[in-house]
Image (cartoon, rainbow, N blue to C red; front, side, top):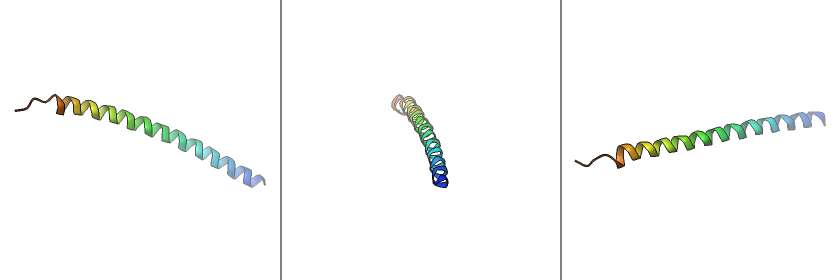
Length: 50
């Protein structure tokens, strides 16, 4: 029974780490999207037509 609880504890720790990593990745993706939109706005939409 103790081994099951230890295994469960390790899984819960790993799950928490994965949630934190997922949150960090989502924040990174959001920042990349903002940056991409800013670049598109600056270099594509505002570029004068020749």
